[in-house]
Length: 134
Ligand code: HEM
Ligand code: HEM
Image (cartoon, rainbow, N blue to C red; front, side, top):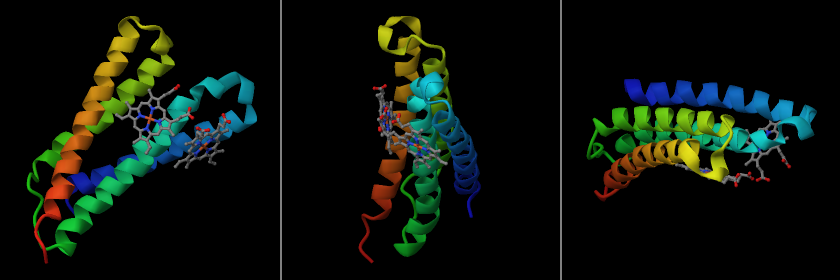
């Protein structure tokens, strides 16, 4: 398995662990930390689920379709953009002023764009693999 596919799997499991612990805490103290729902949702869906799908798809689809990724080096950029972007989005949310405008909101938007850029690299690569009929 390629090193970045493996790193995606490991990262996704770490996000799942943190996301589930946070979910349990939210179940125990609903009033106290209900505002952390954004963090819980994105740790689990953007962290665990999307990264697990990415890792499996990067490994399996080129083999299923006997066709290499159009931009194999892009997987590395996707890994860093997705992880830095997600961590930044979560940090900005935890810092507070997300929906109020200002510097923290601007930073959140920047991290959201980084995450999105990573994901578009994945879309390009995985869509490209399927472009050859086999
Ligand atoms: C033991 C594991 C988990 C616990 C205890 C838990 C607990 C919670 C709690 C307390 C909420 C807030 C509900 C509310 O505010 O009404 C929530 C929301 C949510 N959780 Fe979890 N969760 C767990 C695992 C997961 C996983 C693995 C995922 C996704 C892969 C997930 C996805 C979501 C989503 C999408 C929401 C938001 C739902 C909405 O928009 O109403 N959760 N969870
Ligand atoms: C760059 C990627 C993403 C960004 C910037 C982003 C951003 C956001 C924002 C700003 C909200 C509204 C939060 C609020 O109203 O408090 C939201 C909600 C939500 N997002 Fe994302 N999102 C991204 C990716 C995803 C992905 C890939 C999934 C699922 C696979 C997802 C699932 C959800 C869900 C379920 C909610 C509702 C959460 C709730 O009930 O409070 N998001 N997202």
